[in-house]
Structures are given as structure tokens and as C-alpha cells.
Image (cartoon, rainbow over all chains, first blue to last red; front, top):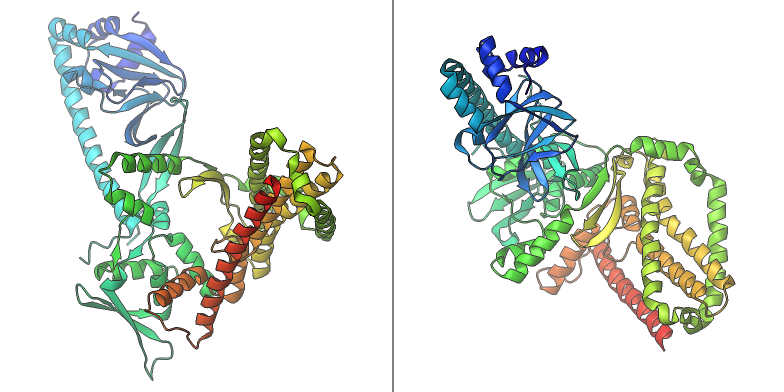
Length: 166
Length: 407
């Protein structure tokens, strides 16, 4: 992918690349691929194999997890400058949720091979990337914990269960 | 302290085309209103009236025989307790409460639920007996398959909550005409003309239905399809009546009732906030769709050549439409249709069917008195007897029609 000024400016605002120097960003841009999705197109399904992470450049991606039958719970909406799919990038495990375009979407794709190459050729940038990634993971873990609490609150409110008095 | 906003889930519901979906916000309050509280088994509790010279209103003592916990219930709470049969949703229970007491206390149901839960007098088991039996025998492949089919069919629910604007427009652009004296007169004239045509036709049912000849299957399917469309029209008119009385249509949709009966439905429960006349008109006008369509069908059949497919088709449609009218308006048939709702509204006994069947069961098992002195017991017996006779007559009439057509 060509390292245009616009792409470089965009990547500077992506959290995991914030600490990258300009040459590192240019090198990274060469390793990224572009991918467009039309509205409602499914990028990957829960259980699919995957080894790429995606950065949203334009549009919104819905991340959802199957609950029952045709019903899925929306876990998060991924907006521009945010990323998703990084879990399979690291451990190669099946996708833990489904990603689908809510609107027309432009993505940048970072594959495992590119990440490995970056680790070898630009260790400083790779370290910054992993450090930022750990911070994002912690935030997401906090959000998941909050979602569990919210699901419990939903259940209690929906059943009218009076736990305090038990 | 400020109350937190109700918890919400955002759900993505897939359509059949795989990529298509609909996003729905489901607030906990929706789950709460659709929950069906169920009291514990009858042999696990005991209830008795508490009479006091001081208190004006009667009270009740409810005892959990397993835990030996006691609960004092007021008369309205006793009424609510009786509704908690595992099949009635909290929304329906609240509606029944409004019908009985003419007002609503927003705290009574949640506080009663809390009390009952503390005393372990409620359970959260499967809501229908069929479901309970299926759940118990889930190990068998056939049972599992039936459960799967029922669950899949129950999930088919195409509905929209954003219908008020549509019905308002429909009302503005001609729907209002249905609620004028001219429409009432036209309906009455059509009914008389239809009845006259039906009398002529019924002189020889065999000739009339002979027109199906070798196209019996096609005939039956087309008649059913047309009837299915008229059910949607029936619901539409309920919606127009609701708008006529300036109340809100909350939902319109299609689903499989009990998992296997395809039906259209409309939520016009907002009409409970209007006058009794409004409720009666809303209930009756929907059913009158079948009167008008049936009359037109009989008139067409009377004009069609004897023994033709058109005559057979129109006559069969007329019979089905008028049967639907009777089923919808006749309250004594064990089905809670429009007529039943009018009856319980007028009598002020929203749980008539439930209580009547319960009383009949207690008589059959020897647990109840043979004949109580109260008006309520007489009403329950009348309901069960009339409904039983009516259902038997309905089956006999249809058997006669089929017999006459085939011999």
C-alpha cells in the first residue's frame, strides 16, 4: 500500500501506532493492505480461522456474538481509528465473534507475517505497538467486566428478583 | 438517590438472507413485562381468608407449606396471586388489574413479586405444560426435534412497533369512514342480503360445494389463503378503531401462536385507557370484517352458476368468514377472542375462563362444592356448560357441512 500523507496522518491517530516514528509509519504502511466492505457485508464469522487484525478507516463495524438461533449480542461498534480482530493475530485461535459492516467500510489490514517482519526490522516500533496493545487490552477487559455486571443487572431487573432480601 | 436507567442489551437479529439483520434494543423492562410469574404447585401452599371486625377490606393469609413461611395479602394482591399461573405475562396481569379495579397502582406488582419471592412462593419453570413435558423428555430424539421445531416457529415473529403513523394516515385517508353511521347501516344491509343469499344457497349444500369437483385441494388452499388475508384485515380494523378513539397502536406483526398457529396480531392495549364503549367498539369492529366479507361471498355465490367453482369457492369462503365472526364474537367457546373480552369487561371478571375451568376441575375431582350459593360459582358453571355445548355444536355443524358436501 502506498504511504500517502493522508494514510500517514490517519495512522498517527490510531492508538497502537501513536508512538511510531515517521520512518516506522512509512514502513508499516507498506505492510498494510486496504479492504473495502459494503454495508452489511460480513468480514468474518465467529469460529472462522484468522491471522489478521483490522483498523477501521471509515464507517462502522459491528462485533457480535451468537446468543441463540439467529440472535446475536452486539458487543461493540468499532469506529474509525479503532481496531479489532487482534486476538487471532496473536494466537491464531478461531474468531471469538462475528464482524460485520454496519455501513460502507474502509479497513486497513495487518497480517501476522507483517507483524513478525515489523518485530524483526523495527523492534522499537514493535515494542511501542505491543505496549499500546496491552493498554488497550486492559481497557477492553475492564469494559468486558462492566458488560458482565450489566448483563447481571439486566437479568435481575427483568425477573424482578429481590436478592437483597435473601 | 437517583434510580439507574434500566439495563439494555443491543441484539442483532439475522434475517434469512444471512447478511441482512435488524438491531433491537431490549431493555430489562421489556423482559420484566413479558415474564410469566408462576406460583408454586397448589399442594405446596395454602390460602385462607382473614376476617376482621376492624378492617373493612378482607385480607388473606398465604402459607408456604414447605418452608412454613406466612404472607399477608390484601384483596388486590390475592387477585394478582391468582393470575400468576405461569402462562400470563406481567403486562397481561396489569391489564387484568386495571379492568377489575379501574385504576393502577404502579408499585403493587413489583412489591408483591418481591414478597412472594422472599417467601419462595414463585417458580421460574417452563411456561407451558407442553414445554414442561418436552423439557422432561429431552433425551429422546423425537422430543428434541419437536422442541427444536416449536422453538424455531416461535422465533418467527415479524413485527414493527413503529405503526402509529401508518394507522393514523390510514384513518385520515378513508379509515374514519368505517366509524360513521353510514358504515354501520351498510354493514347491516350487507349482513341481511348475505344472510338471505346464504339461506337460498343452503337449500342444497351438496350442489353448492360440488363445484370444487376435481379441484378440491386448490379450492381449500385458496379459501384458506383468502381467510388468512382477512385475519390481517381484522387486525387492521382494530388498529383503526384504536386510532379513532385517539389511543396508540403499539405493535403490528405476524407470528406462530403457541408455535404452530400462523396469525397476524396487533397490540391495541392502549385502548384500556379509554372508555368501555371504546373498548367494545374496538373489539366488535375488527370482527365485523368477517361479517362483511362473508356476506359479500354469499351474495357472489348466490349469483354464480350452480355447481360452478366460483359458487363453491365463494360459498366456502362465506361459511369460513361467518364462522370466524361467530368464533370472534361468541364468548362461550373457551377461546379468549373479542367477544370474550367484551363479556369479561362488562361483567368485571377478567379471569372468568381461568376461574371457571379451575372451578370445573375442582368439581370433577371432588375438591369443590357441587354448587355454590354465590353468583360467581353460577357464572363459572354457566360459562363451562355453555362453552362445552357451543364447541360440540361447532364441531357437529362442520361435520355436517363436510358430510353434506361429500354425500
